Structure formats: C-alpha cells, structure tokens
Amino acid sequence: MALRKCPKCELNYLKPGETICHVCASAMKRRKTAAVEEEEVVMCSNCGEAPAVKGHDLCEECLREQKREAELELMADKLRADEADMPIEEDIDEEDSDEE
Ligand SMILES: [Zn+2]
Ligand SMILES: [Zn+2]
Image 1 (cartoon, rainbow, N blue to C red):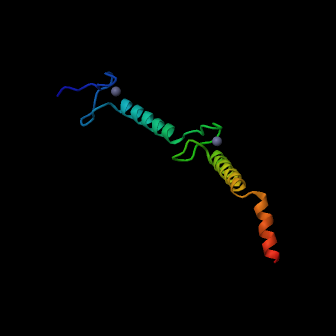
Image 2: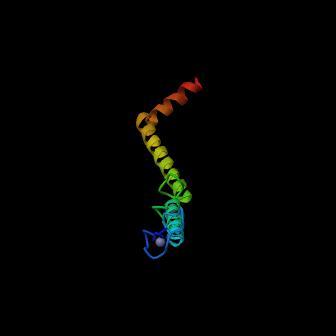
Image 3: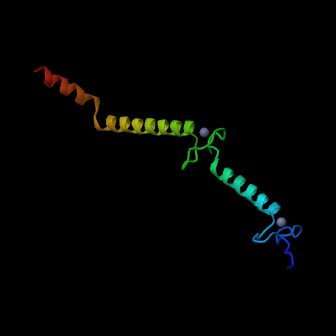
C-alpha cells in the first residue's frame, strides 16, 4: 500500500482516513477560527472605538446618541408644526372664553 502525500502541502504523508495532513488541518482550523472572530467583532462605523451592536453599524453608545438626536429632531419638527397650526392669538381667545 502506497502512502499518499497531503494535497495541500505535498510534504507530509496522509494517515489512513485523512484527506489532508494534520499540519494543514490545524492550520485550516486556525484560519477558520480567526475568520469567524473577525466576522463577529465589527467596530462601530461612527467612533470606531467600540464594537458595534449585533445587526447595527454603530456601538451601543452611538446608537443611543443617534436615537436621542432622532427624537430631538422629531420633537423639533412637531413643535414647528404646532406653531404653524396654532397662532398665539388663538390661545388668548381660549383663555377669554374660559373666564366667562
Ligand atoms: Zn499538509
Ligand atoms: Zn460608536
């Protein structure tokens, strides 16, 4: 029975049942683990200092900041809309009718 050489490195002989030698197998395993780790830890695209929250581009801190800013903007828009809908004179009319 002839020994087969590892098709990857062509240096080491394969043991029965192996498709690649143990050196290549452990090297591949290391690479795979490193790739997975790289995929899991995504840095925040905004500050780049903290890991991003899963499913987001931003870290927890930046997400909170972004949410706060969005809420403030929404509130500002609402205030502007309210001001446009209700002129100040209307408030005075209401107060007059309450007193009667
Ligand atoms: Zn090999
Ligand atoms: Zn961040």
